Image (cartoon, rainbow, N blue to C red; front, side):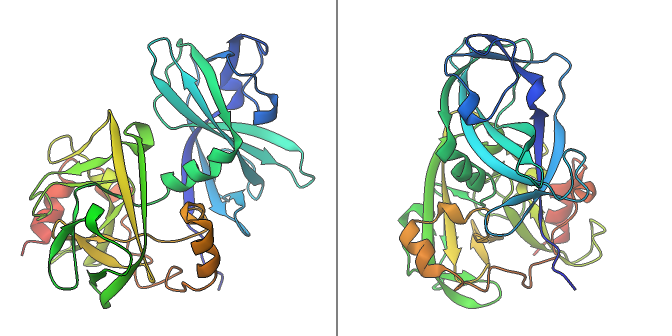
Length: 335
């Protein structure tokens, strides 16, 4: 039986929703990198709405439109064309990933724009930078689970140390395989906006000893003594962003955030601020984050990053669409 490939859901706008209102390409929609002119001014159509583009990782680093995607042609190849930087009149920066969908002959079928922060209609955005090389890295960062600076990680000895003091070779306590060495530590500083705005879990909200700050899609592991969510199993993985309630779990936007990724030989459940959370899951999407020498050295040598014991434990978002989801999990996992 073929392995089900994970689906990447992106909220995108059609290129026609973004049109140049001033500059060399006035009146034209957003295009691929080679056709864009810096300093042109763009606006989002007043009736524009974001649509879901569902993607799967294809062969190598390619992307294909998933069978159930509301937008795009299922099976069509999608290329990460560029990362665009815009600036509004107030000096606020907006990054947009441009994705180009092609047909079997390689002809452009559609251009999609994925804003990394909220974009408002009737607002002028000046194109200040076109970065074809940065698209793959930004896309990788979006899909990478990360802890913030200051997060205390539990070592195999039981000691808790801030993540920024760890180094490759340090041994961490894992839930399933005892002591395991850190293979690599990633580090990046990004604007805490849109998809990069971290999720803050207040101390005690999930029995965590201190405030835990993670990237939105970071998954936490919870063992329920009773199935409070109706997931049909006691062990569940929940994405931090699905637990936001505005009080004990909230999104922190503004300024910058320093993120860290912990790569082990296998995808593991480790401990951060005293509660269980996943380590980095290496896949074709986030592999570009690795330094080239390490990527070459690890080629096909980390089998523990495919299907494993954690596959199938993630809770559907529909079961978490309630303001008391975090509290239900806290009570269900009471020590």
